[in-house]
Amino acid sequence: DADVTQTPRNRITKTGKRIMLECSQTKGHDRMYWYRQDPGLGLRLIYYSFDVKDINKGEISDGYSVSRQAQAKFSLSLESAIPNQTALYFCATSAGQLDQPQHFGDGTRLSIL
Amino acid sequence: GQNIDQPTEMTATEGAIVQINCTYQTSGFNGLFWYQQHAGEAPTFLSYNVLDGLEEKGRFSSFLSRSKGYSYLLLKELQMKDSASYLCAVKATNDYKLSFGAGTTVTVRA
Image 1 (cartoon, rainbow over the protein chains, first blue to last red):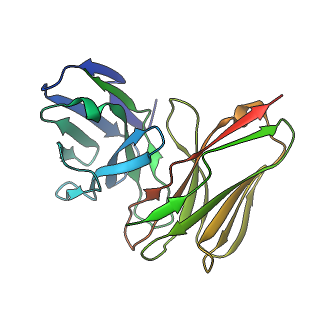
Image 2: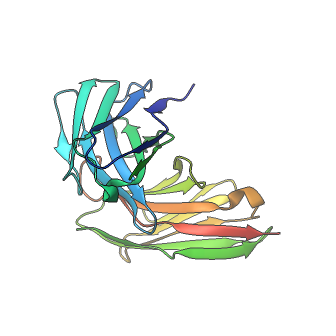
């Protein structure tokens, strides 16, 4: 079983719809992150959380919100989806030491028509 | 903001060596990571450098020069399965965020 699980893996929806992407982890990490990946732009940080009561904006948080329901769960919401939010979304986790890498889920491919 | 540059694409022959360069200009430095990402899949961790010098892990090596703001990833004895995108990421401040370069797509030809 994957250590970092994202659901759904693929989603096609229409402009204006509310969408939630979910991430759960069994690694026991406190730190969780949401990124989006677009061709030629690399991974860009949307939101991150260092523990259950901690939520921080990343570089491109406009149009998104998050919820850290438990140590193991971090969800990303698009309140009113727009076509330029079409992208590949990744959840990641990391342990508490600076030299520890982030571990990524398999991604959610989101298309907004 | 953070500025991390790497070439967009590289092509090499099976069995050869390829060097992927990464230059960075960031506010502070607390380590540099290299990730491998096959098309449509999750990035996976390859290497970490925080001190100057070379780190070797099997066929892959990574080098860092902090004074030059420069790193490279060296892939030796290339195999077809090494065809992937390679991402350079810098931990700029004393927290846990990473800033990523756009990635270098390496194509290995037979």
